[in-house]
Image (cartoon, rainbow, N blue to C red):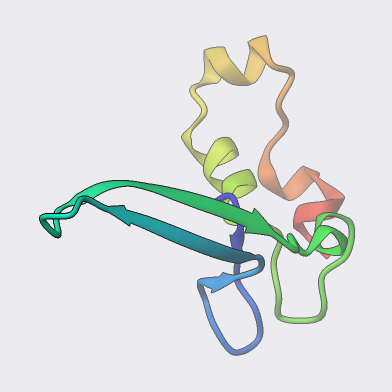
Length: 86
């Protein structure tokens, strides 16, 4: 949700790159992993092409917030945010 958004061709498009390094023990079992994130499409925060949306996380935050949370955090309805409705 933090790095995915709806595009004209994909409803759940990853808008960043990632490199996953998996470390193994000599026995072949997984010892650990490291995920490096890079190249987040920052321009999507302020502008989306026709038939595209902002990052899913913003819609999830607003859709899942209770009335108390909306009041406490001064959240509006999703349709009241320009960046979510271009």
